[in-house]
Image (cartoon, rainbow, N blue to C red):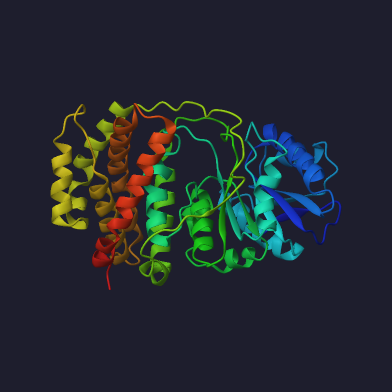
Length: 407
C-alpha cells in the first residue's frame, strides 16, 4: 500500500517506468536518477517515461536528493509507512502505481550501482519491447560472488521450473506492465518476500506465468557497496530459502510436470565485456568450521528431516579433513529435497519451519567450501561449467523429490 505519494508533474499515464527502490540512499539516488534520465532521453526520446523512487520512508534526505537530481524526466516519489521496511514492500507500491499509469514496460534498478551507465536502460527495457514478459540480467561475476545463487537458487529453481535463468535473484529486472497485476494477485506473499526474498519471488511468479522470460547480457559486473558475502548471510539465506520453499507448495502442480530444463532467450548476445568483476575472497576454513558447528546444534533436527541414507552420508562427509573435504552435489540436492518435503509436512507450524530453514545454513556453507575447493584453480568460465554440472545433477535427481514430497 502506498503511504505517501508526490507527483509534482501530475503524471497520469506513461509507456515506460524506471523504478529505483531505496532505503536511506541520499548519497546515491541523485546520480542514479541522472544516469537513468540520460538513458531515457538518449534511447527512448519518443516514449513517455517516468522515474519512480519507491522508498522505505528514508530519514536521510533520499526524497530531497531524488527531486534535486539534474534531469528533465518526470519523477514520482512513493513511500511506505514509517514502520514498513524491505525491498518487497517498496516494489508492492510500484506494482500498484504501474497499474494506475497503465505502463507497458517497467525497469527496476538498485540505487547503489556505482558503474550504472545510460546504456543499461535499453539493455533491460528493449527485451520487453521485443516481446519478453520478464527480464533478468546476466552480470559478469567472479566465481565466488553470490554463491547462494550458484549453489542453491539457480540449481533449485532451474530443476523445479524448467528454465535456465542464471541470476534470478540479481536485484534488478524488467517486466511487462501487465505482469504487475499478476504480482499483486500472486499467493505466498510473506515477511521474507517483503525483505530480500522479493527477487526470487518475482522470478518464480514470472517462470510459472507461462510467458516469455529472457536474460539480458549486461557485459559488466554489478559494482555496488561490497560487503563480506558471508557477514549477514543468515538473514538473507533464511528469507530466500523460505520464499523458495513457500512457493514450492503454491506451484506444486506446475513443477511436478517439469522434467528437464530449457535454455532461456538471451538478449545482447554479441555484447562486449566492458570490465572484469571484482575478486571475491572466501575464508573457506571459517566456513568449514561453521559447517561442523551445525552438527552440535541441528543434528537431531536433521535426523528427523532427512532420509536415513542421506543423513548417514552427511556424517561421512563430516568425517573428512579440510584438505580432503568434498560435499557431493547429489547429496546436497537430496538433502535440500528432503528439507523441502519436511517443510511442506510442517504445515502452519511457523516456528518449526523457521528452525528447519536455519538448520540448512551450515550445510550450505559446507557445500560452498566444497565448491571453492573444487574450483579454486579454475577460470570463471570453467567454474561456470561446474555450476552447470551441478544443475544437471539436481535435474537428474528430481524423481527423488517427487518420491519424498507429501501427497
